Image (cartoon, rainbow, N blue to C red; front, side, top):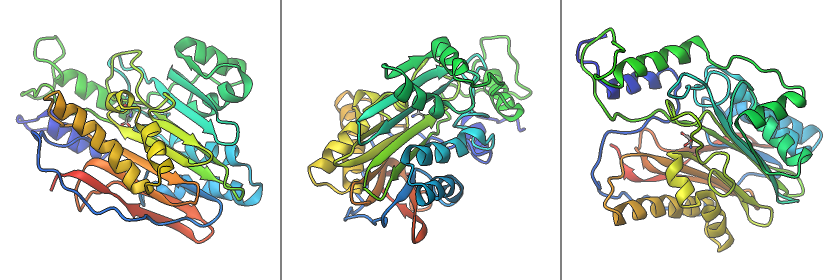
Length: 354
Ligand code: ASP
């Protein structure tokens, strides 16, 4: 690595390692790019939706769609699809192989919701369990609570037969080590190169999965390893119902990825669903939630140098997505599988990264 190594370069390189959505260069209140939003594309009948494009979309949506087609079991379908990324160490933003926290410990967040009962479950700061969405499902189905965190969530998982495993892959450990050695020039950790750029952008990534069955009942999951190098115990938006995930069986489903703190303080996914209730298309509803984040930051005089993305599906099977930042080359994606096969849809973005 060259002497001019910078955090930004490091994160850029890391994107080649499938680190998920990496954040852009600093932009001080850049021009807002308003892409047109029309009614979005529509899936046909039972379908599985996810917040990814061509690379992950088919392998995530296929197993859930197979379950939906064969047995119609909606919860099994969304769980199986979300498990794909949780179990795959190549995805370094979800489950096993996720980027660890500041102390090199992988802590996972996940939530689940079932439309017909409006029940939900979630886990946060869960260590040692590869499939946190499956634990969130048990919290929903087998307890009278909604959210379990930390050691309590892990004990609950073990009592349901889950194995405690090492979630830290060698690849994720090396990414952490490079971050640790470069994060400060005031500590005793020395990087094998000189030049430290402080306050660089953070590694993020998550997956949202929705399902709709032949009765038009809907279910959803959000699952993540959260913000890379976070303070131990930090909980993002993903396990917070209304923030990283929300759905209403009469309206549709929404989920978020990106900087979770912004999504929490704007109740982002709830906002998207409520906008769809008022008749907005999924694309338009996602755009409104992105605009809300930009607006509150502008109001407070804070530079918008982070990204958030929403994906949504309405009760009719219409899908959409929108992000704060994107480019023609790298727009936000949502994808789905239905009886006509696999499809992707590129959404709009507010700030053009060029
Ligand atoms: N939203 C997640 C969190 O803040 C991370 C991400 O989606 O990138 O934990």
